Image (cartoon, rainbow, N blue to C red; front, side, top):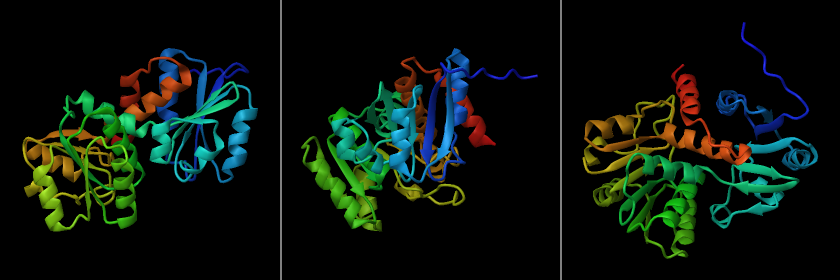
Length: 289
């Protein structure tokens, strides 16, 4: 019979908040990591509609260590914490809140998680030309992180939304860290930008379950020298990644970004190195089933 974890008044509590949250893998991932290291932590999920009162509760409850924040609260929560890193302020959203003795510190882990996925895959970013497909929240996090961490030669952004695309391009141009190009993903623009790109990152939901047969990039535009990173992780290998692998590209799965952002949250919550392989195994088991 499986033993039941002991929850005491000393147990530190972490949670994911959002609406909906029933589908979240975070409790399974974090609790498996706590158990692996024998940490007196527990991680739960709360469906939250009244965000200000929920955050006030975090401040008030002794032993409530931190929050993972998901849709639709990642923007609004920024106005309810005491500290946000400058890069996250420019991105415009956070997904992590840590309670430091009643002082709430907000951070984003999506961008750093994506960067680590690329670095771990051996991808060279210095002086490279990156094509970002999409300009929404995930794209903003990745764009600002890459632009701030590597001396990119060029960052091209293609998105159907004029408003999102131009806003991201303008915000990045203010940094002056790389040449910024932006446009709509019509056939001609996509072909031109694919020809120029060393690294291609899909930040759109194209190819996500249940539309698993779709790809945002025609296979014929892929080149063996390219790195292709798809942040979609359901299915585990998207049509884009399968096409890229078949063309001889270096491929980076969205699972790695997903695991990395959870790992970074774990470290912030516990102050302890994460059992990365335990967390990755949980993700793969849950997604595979």
